[in-house]
Image (cartoon, rainbow over all chains, first blue to last red; front, side):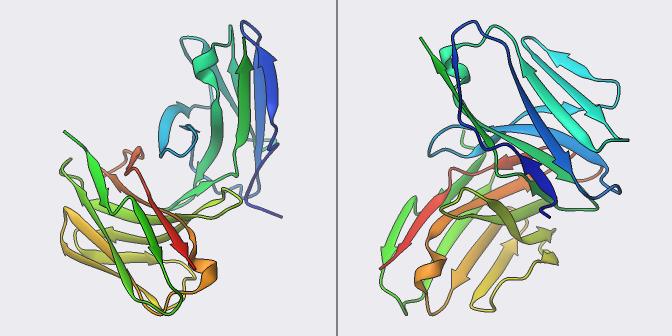
Length: 108
Length: 113
C-alpha cells in the first residue's frame, strides 16, 4: 500500500462548481500535512498547510481527520485558473512524502 | 529574483554518458533536496542536505552522487546514464527549524536516448 493515496482523477468540472479531493495516508506517525499545487510542466508550490481543526484560505478549505488518516481539500466557486494537479503531502520525520496527485480541469 | 534555480532546464543525452545538474537557492535556507518525478508523475525524494551535510539518502543507485559545495548549492551528478533515468529532477530548499514549506526549482527535464 502506498504511503499517501489519492484519486488521480481527472476531475472535469464547470466554472463555479465546488469540488472536493480526498487523500489517505498509511503512517499514523505522520506529523504534518499539506496540499501542494503543480501546474502542467511546472514545479510544485505550497497551496496550504492542513491543521487538525480545519483551515480555510479564501475559496480553499482543508480538513484533517487523524483517526481515519484522511485529508481533504474543498475548492468552492472553481475558476479556470484552478486547473492543475493537487498533491497531498505528508511529513513523517524529515522528508515530505507526496501523493501522485489529483488532476483538476475547470471548464468554461 | 529567482529563489531556487536549476540548470539546465532541459537535458537530452545518450545512454552511458555522465551528466550534472546544478541547483542554487538565494533564500538563505539550510536544507536542500533533490526529487525525481517520473513519467507517472510520482514525486519522490532522492537526497537531502542540511548545511552541506547529507542527511537523507533514499534508495537511489550509487550512480547518482549529490555534492554541496556550500549551503546555497546542491548539485547532482549522474554517471552511466540509463533509459530509466529519464524524468524531471526538482531541487528544493527549506528553512531550518519547524517550518516545513519547501520551495522548488523549475525542474530539469532529463531525457536519456
